[in-house]
Image (cartoon, rainbow, N blue to C red):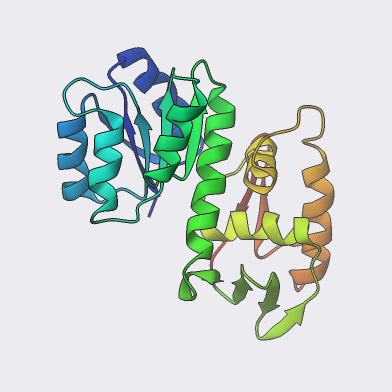
Length: 227
């Protein structure tokens, strides 16, 4: 099931921009344009993370954050045009997990969403275990087993495998895998993913020449097969 992100901003163009980039990254996106609607959506749909503008009509972003923190630990990234240090501090002290100022890079925002979700999942013990078919990953200890046998992976190899295994069947481009591993994509280095995949296949596949787990989707990227 896709991770659900709620985007709250009174500017329709901002909502569309953020939605487009998040959906392209594989997230399910909900939207609200004011604080009261945002609170209703949170209670109804229980999103996994909220991108929350500070300047909202009616109930502003700080009040939304304050009210949510009374009942929920859902990760919150504040999004605002305010750049004063005091505003950032207030948002963070109210319980926001991160703070992005306008104008912003949509790709950076996606990276911050990923990083915040990684931090949030790492705070819960059972959530550190990821199982897909015969592959089992401990995302806290960075250890892997395949069919019960330990596999020695580098940290980057581990993160590439974890990104693929979290969403079996989904096709990841090289750029998306770099974003999943590093938080942001590094232009000109996307082919390094091919080397990591080659090493992963050598380590986890029964026959690397005929991959069972990590399959190439020609012209698009890679996907993990859970079987």
